[in-house]
Image (cartoon, helix red, strand yellow):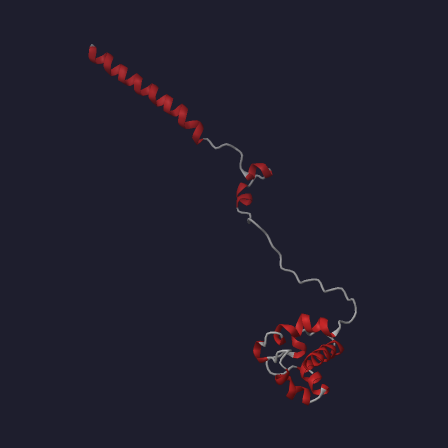
Length: 148
């Protein structure tokens, strides 16, 4: 009879331990409804969970306000100076009078033509196709004042 009591005691102890463990583990495993899907009020939580973290849009830059034609120094500093201040792609530096001497010797019209149509590695109008011929001529005149 002593064996029956010990077996029953072990059985009840095991049942009680199992109930205690279930009482502890069950609340930890039940999902609490605080997800982004529930916050958004969506029935399909997968749509909310797979949304991108950020969004961006590529758009053309708005054209600058037409404040009239640009003067020579402005055109030089915004377009021409990128190469003619550093000597990039073989461009003669604006402060190198020896490099400019043969070009100045050809005359203004030849320099205008080269600047407008492009020459060597320099694209037409220095890559700024939106500039007018008069604005390019103003930049050439500005360079000539620096190299003479």
